[in-house]
Length: 344
Image (cartoon, rainbow, N blue to C red; front, side, top):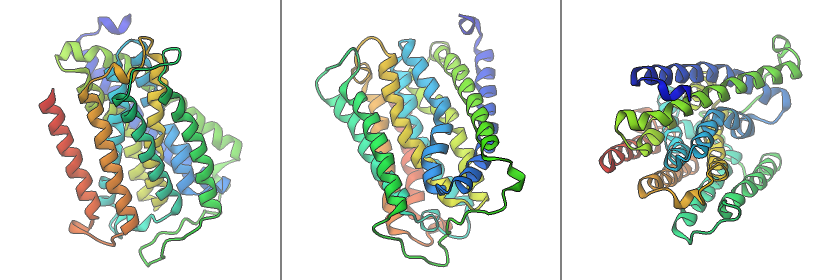
C-alpha cells in the first residue's frame, strides 16, 4: 500500500499532521457540544459522557479497528486501553488550569459518579476475558459481545440518574451549577448545529484512519514494540481531542462537560475492544495480546478508582491548589509510562 513506501521522516511528519488536525477539530467540537447540551436540555454531564465522548473517541476507534483488521492485535488493544489512562490524566491537567477550586469538587453531579462506576465495571471484563479460557463465537469472545449490551443499558440508567436522582451533592460556593444558556440566536437551528457537529466528527474519523495506517508502519521502522506505539503514541495522539475539549470546556466554565466528556469517552473507548475483536480474524483478541498490553487495563482501573474517590470526597483545595487525586493521577500515569519503557 501507499503508506508502506513512506520513509520514517515522512511517517513522523504524517503522524504530527494528523495529530494537529485532531487537536484543532477538538476545540470546535467542544463549542458545539456545549451548545447542544443547552439546546437539547440533556445537560453537560450526559452530553459530555455520550455525545462528546463518542465524537472525540472516533479517531481512536478507527485506529484500533484498522490495526486489528491488519492483524496488529497488540497495537489495536493497547491503543484502546492506553488512551483511557492518558485521558484520565488529562483531568489532572484540567484541574491545574481551573483555579477556582478542585475540579472534582466543582463538577459534582450524580451522573458523573455513575458513569465512573460503569467504566470501572467495563474495564474489569477484558481482564476477566484475558485470564479466562480461550473461547470465541465466530472468532469473537463473549465478553466483546457483552460490552455493548452493558454500555447501552448503562446509558439508559445514566439518563434515569440525571432525570430522577436518588441523592444530590451538597452545594457549596465552589460548586459550579449546570445552567443552560438561553441566547441561541447566533447558533442557528438545531439541525444546522447537528450537521456542523457531524461534519467535525467525520473529519476526526478520517484523521484517525490516516493515523492508524501510519502507526502500523512505525514499530518496524523505529525498532520499538507495537505496545509502546499503541499505548504511548497513537493512544495519546488520538486522545488529543479529549485534552483540547476538556481544557476548552473548563475555560468556558462547563466543568460537568469537561469531566463527563473524559469519563464518557473512556467508557466508549472500552467498546474499541469489541470492534477490534470483530476486526481481528485470528481468534479472540484477548488471547493474542501480552502482559504489557493488559498492564494498561490495570492502570486504567487504578486511575478511574482514584478519580471516583476524588469525586466522592470532593476536596475543595489540595496541594498546589489542585486535588490530591489529581496529583495521584499524574504520579500513577508517569509511573506507568516508566514501567512501560522498562518492559519494552
